[in-house]
Each structure stands twice: as structure tokens, then as C-alpha cells.
Length: 106
Image (cartoon, rainbow, N blue to C red; front, side, top):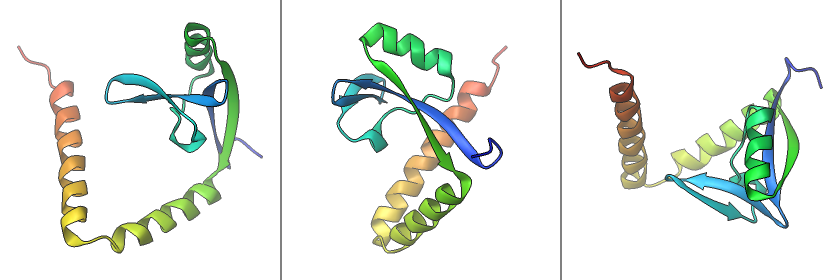
């Protein structure tokens, strides 16, 4: 695949598990799709050294990402209103938090 048609990322594998970083905590998961995706090879190598794991290169096409996005949108639209509102509220919280971190206080 051409690099303009795909996204390259790296996961760190430890035995049958993959490195996962959630809510500030480093854990592992058996589900590779839940693994932390490094976009920088050097960062992935450093983490692999720290946790005695191995770096695995992964590629996904933009077409596949588009198809996944469409599928997830269909699933999202079928959710009850309360669940959609909870997701949207949480996403807005993350956006606001990021905006606050970018502000410079004098």
C-alpha cells in the first residue's frame, strides 16, 4: 500500500497480550483492537524495551477506516437517546479539558 492510502501504526505485544494505556493506567489486553496505537516507531520501541515486549507494525487503509466509521455511525444512531447524550457530554468534556490545557495563564 502507498503511504498516502494508509495509516501505519505500531502496537506493543507482550506474550499473548498487547499494551493498553487507559485513564492514565498502563494495562494489557488480549484484544489487539483495544491496544494502544503508537504512531511513532521510536516511542513504540521505547515502550517495548520498558515492558519487555515486541513492536508489531500494523497498517490500515483509509478506505477501511471509512468503512469502520460508517459502521460505527450506524451503531451509534441505533443507541437510545440517553446513551448518545452521555457520549456527547463526555466528548465535550474532553474537548473542554483539552482547550483548558492549551490556555496560557499569565
